[in-house]
Image 1 (spheres, rainbow, N blue to C red):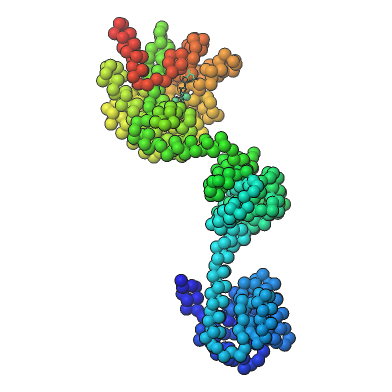
Image 2: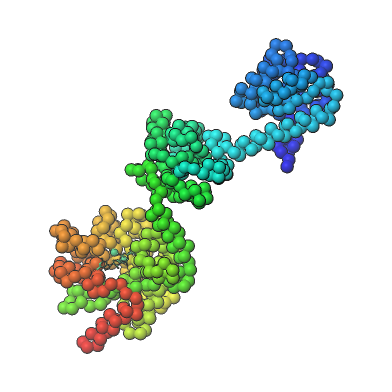
Length: 564
Ligand code: C2E
Ligand code: CA
Ligand code: CA
């Protein structure tokens, strides 16, 4: 492999330190063609010329006036900046050769200089060795913090685990909160100082005779060490940071996998600690998080769900259930619509309720795929029932907070309607109030557009968050859907009753109906009816059921109509 010098056509510099003129000349002539040669007549003169990386090699005569070669060699070896510069000593005394190698010379050349090829070959070999060593050292350690680089770190862990099997080990991932901000606000120099401080403090913070650390990414540190009380160490690190960078408010976050399973790959052990650390990102109350089995089982389960989404859509493993909504304004309750609620019939994991995958899929955007599928199935069902019973039952579908941000939302909904041959009146949308808290402007824009196309929009979970009132002041909607908790608490507290009254009052003012969901018994139904609530949905009438089962409700309704 060619290296930098060969690529750039640069001659490496060598320094000949020799007090005898004639020897200097002979040696210089031997090396001149290959190297850029510099000379010093004694140790002092050489010392003056030395600077980090100034020479690729020093050829040093041991016996010189003023400052001897032996002394100069000792000085070089004790200087951290010069330590890695290779030195070949030149001598005619056998004993001195051995001594100088012990003191750190890389090789020796014997006087007189009568074998030029040997001298050239030795110089070449030593330069090559030292350059290789430097490259290896630079990949082994991170130049800023001097901690191990990722690859070496994991390699050394494997060695430790192989050779020292006794004892428990802890795995730590440390991360600096908002490190990017520190860099941006105070400059990279400060950012670097923070990183160095953490690195320099790690060894003292976690007292363990066996400890290695790495900085695998910008502001992330990995620590592998003996098992003990780790929280103290993290607190110590934080104290040190506070002491040094008080005003900067540098905050450390730690994910700790204690007594780690040594039978799993080190990379996976650190993945677990990393996930644990990520779990408390943005959480200002806790800075240390411990890995636990439950969490792991949950994340493996979630990974599985994420992996299976596409095939579930393809194989129709997502099943849409329907829950009836009844109009209670008349004598007897009248079926007026249904809500489409998804379930996942997983071929191996069994029935999964939406509460177990909707929040997860909202987190990673997969919800858009699922919702699209549900809308399409629901629209198909509406049309199917229309054909089968000559009866149009509008169905409402849920629109997730994430869907609201989809620039193609309108287009997708239009396609769902036209693909299934139904109209805007047949499919209603429920947008949860929390979407408005996320991005009021976008919710307003989307709602206005969809309504202008004739779609009806209800606010789901109305009253559950803090933005209900703001939302209805700014956005025109068609239905308010009372949050389940109000109905559930009706018996328990006066406040719920009062709030329902207020909400129904607001709905009157806005001239939109109120849907109460979660109605489970007759008392609740009566109270709601008494308060003037128009539509109810809940286990009192039916749980969400598969489409075939739902047909019984339609049949009953059709019969009632026929009898009138
Ligand atoms: P949600 O939109 O508020 O749906 C109503 C939930 O209340 C449903 O739970 C329903 O089964 C339940 N429920 C209905 N009546 C009663 C009752 O009388 N008592 C009690 N205790 N609960 C009742 P489900 O089906 O488990 O859905 C939970 C949530 O998952 C939904 O809340 C909705 O936010 C979400 N979700 C369900 N399907 C979809 C979907 O297709 N897309 C999206 N984006 N979200 C969905
Ligand atoms: Ca809903
Ligand atoms: Ca709801």
